[in-house]
Length: 159
Figure 1 (spheres, rainbow, N blue to C red):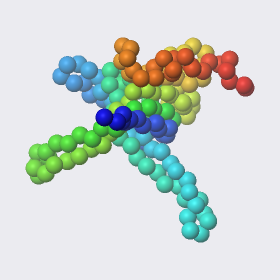
Figure 2: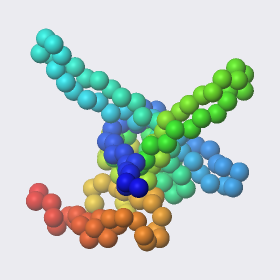
Figure 3: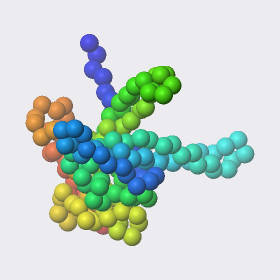
């Protein structure tokens, strides 16, 4: 069987304040939307922006970080995977679908005055951005050794 990949990388702005809930087991869940914008020339040569909206869901510690530091307008970078849920509408009985990005990694990019408290949480001390990796700590992930061995520090940045 051929290898498959389900990976999403997004950098954008949060559309509205995230919503939070807890599962029956007590797990924190954050749901929010992220806007990404693509710029292209139209037939007349003028640049036109096209905004795409993405539904994101985060769990456990990542949801808690979102609760504490992310709000409408925050600029964030995420890595995750696509998942489509389906259910039967209780009132109409028709099947409904929702495609979401399950967040595995989150990097807070906004400063405190830019719509987010990005400087308030940092996994790596001395970093101007903040990140949290939600992937399980257990080994066995393909490429984890490569990712860990190529981590960029402040000393690697030329300015």
